Amino acid sequence: MKLLIAEDDFTTRAMLQSVLARWSYEVEAVADGHAAWAALGRPDAPRLALLDWTMPGLDGVEVCRRVRALAAADPPYLILLTARTQKGDIVVGLQAGANDYIAKPYDTGELQARLAVGTRMVELQASLARRVTERDELILQLQAALAEVKTLSGIIPICAGCKKIRDDKGFWNQVEAYIQTRSLAKFSHGLCPDCTERLYPELAAEIRRNRPVLKPD
Image 1 (cartoon, one colour):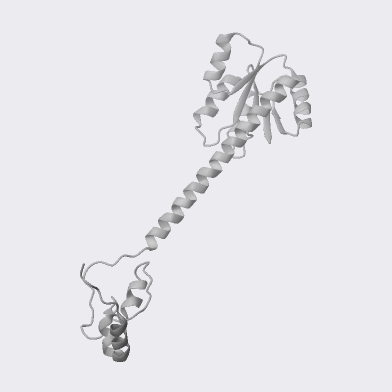
Image 2 (tube, rainbow, N blue to C red):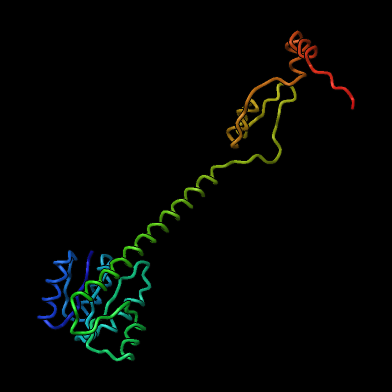
């Protein structure tokens, strides 16, 4: 995972970069707040950031404010590095948009644990974003499917003799063919009693003979 270090002290920055690389982070290091703000504003911005509170140009708190003002759909996880440990200072940092803070001098075990939390949060965010995208794609597919569903309405010209239906292009179609192209209906074929009597009189007679007689109660 990409991780940004914004630290103006060269020694601290180099040490952090070395430690984080050993933890398999893809590290980008900058020396001031303006460079941090530029990095976090890119489309391919790192998903995690360690920001020193006190830096030339923009301090870490101002960088947090600017990043949160972007209102991105997948905002980065921001951790402030600070020697300030007063509750008031911590509140200021968190209200500016920091997700967490680490007091200097930092403990490597604590740093690793807090970064692990940040990594889990970023991965959860990405998973939720994917689900939203999949949901939106499904909605579009359903809308497209519904748009293809056709309904019959209005006056339909039908032949009084053969019962064919005339379509809007002037062609005459069998009833089932006309309806199937304009709805989701499917047809199964059979014979009504009247047609059975007319077309197959012997079969109709046999049916009548075998039909059970209904007795009144």
